[in-house]
Structure formats: C-alpha cells, structure tokens
Length: 204
Image 1 (cartoon, rainbow, N blue to C red):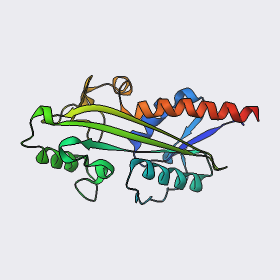
Image 2: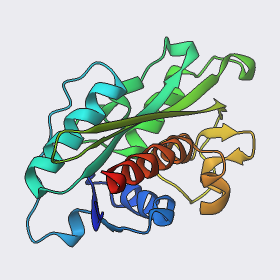
Image 3: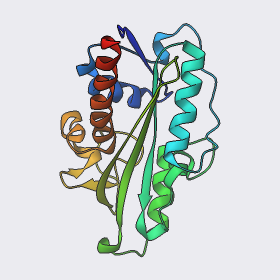
Image 4: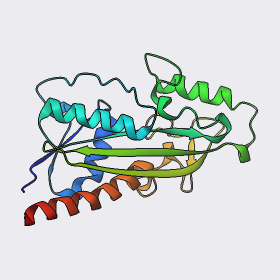
C-alpha cells in the first residue's frame, strides 16, 4: 500500500495548518479543504462526545473526497462548570460562533471563581477513516487553568485564556504549543498507529 494523500477534514484554517505541521513526519501529502476545487458540506455535530463528533467529520470527509481522512473534535472542559463547554466549545456563546464571544462568556461564568478552582483541560479526539473501512483513533489532553484576562496574540479559540505548564497558549510559539498541546499529543499517538497500519498493509 502506498499512501499518497491524507485529507484533513476541517474548515478551520488555523487547525488545518496545525495538522499539516504536526503530520509532516508522515511523508504524505496532507490535503485540506483549501486544496480542493469544491467546498465540503457542513457536518452536523450530533455526537455527545468528542470521539463521536470526530468520527462523523472523518466519515463525511472520506465520502466527499475518496481519500483517507483524518478529523478531530476538540474542546475545553472547565471543572468549575461541570466540564462545560466541552463538545459545545466552538458554539458556547451561540451561533454564529465567535472566539471573542466564547471567551467573554467563559470569563463571565468564572467571574467569582478563584484561581485554584479554575482548573481545566483541552481535549482532542482524532479519528481517521480509510476508504476500505479501517479506522484509527487517538486522544490527547492538556491540563491547565483559565486565566482572568485574555493574553497573547497567538493561537485561536480559548488559547488566550488557557494557561498550561509552559504559560498561556496565546503567548506561546507554535513549537512551544506543539510540545504540550492536546492536539499534538493526540496526533503523536495517531502517528504511531498510522505508521503501524501502513507498514502492516505493505506486508500484505
């Protein structure tokens, strides 16, 4: 089996670039929607878990392109909010989704919460679906706390509020974020599983 292309099913250009950067060691052509001559249909994220939603997106991308497709569903789980926003992270403040509105709502809900109770984690679940039906999955998490005000100009989503062991995601360089992020951890696990699958197929 010779793997030529791997499609990343996301409409988020920041996330597509992050995938492309971390998946570079695969030695395959990582394709995103911007490389296609058609627009992907929206996928209704009806799952109640990150795992279910990542699978829905991967299956839809594979059917639309005919390529092995990898997709993720990720979000922020805040302990003081009972794990919310969770799978609703992108649309926490409602539609149309807005990073600024989501961050403002999160800060307002944590207005009177002290630092030691602002613990949270970013979660990323990855699914990869192959045209012949094989599926690979991986999961990564990054622990941290929610800051009291936005910081930094880097990243996207809740990065400006999430403080990891290395500091606020919004202030980290791409390489620094990749060394600790939930998506990087999940993708590294995925890389290992993907390489095993490809090597196994080559022997068949």
